Length: 186
Image (cartoon, rainbow, N blue to C red; front, side, top):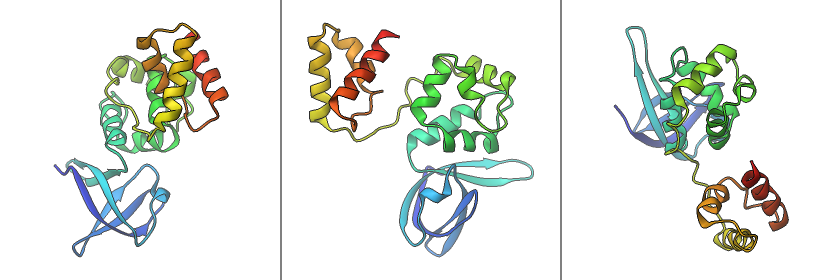
């Protein structure tokens, strides 16, 4: 099994990319091939699927995307081709949150995911996705300011740590506080 491959993207297709590595072109299915640009070098994290009729590579920009993909394809009735659009159209944290909160309506917005499969995803994955989270580069100064405000409002450090990861720190501090308070009050 491959962990990752580094190379230059030579072609972008509707559901895949061609990545050149030392003169060999690898066809890699990705959640959103249009995130890549031709003639640029990338490190793509891989999952290889080998069956009687298929030998395919699935590629992801981050290890977190790949980890979520691997969890999703272990759900009964959900294969690789169904998991790709989920990752393409949803954020990692949003998908995890929907599963943890049993938000069936959110999960049903993805292609080919009906009520039964959404419930199966929750049944198979709830409580098992805590190790996956997107690593967003965070402005420490903005994060510290948000933490201090929440401490000043009387919230405990433990509660603040869990919430701060879910708040978009690129927003103005006022909006960050509003978002954090909404999450803390749930």
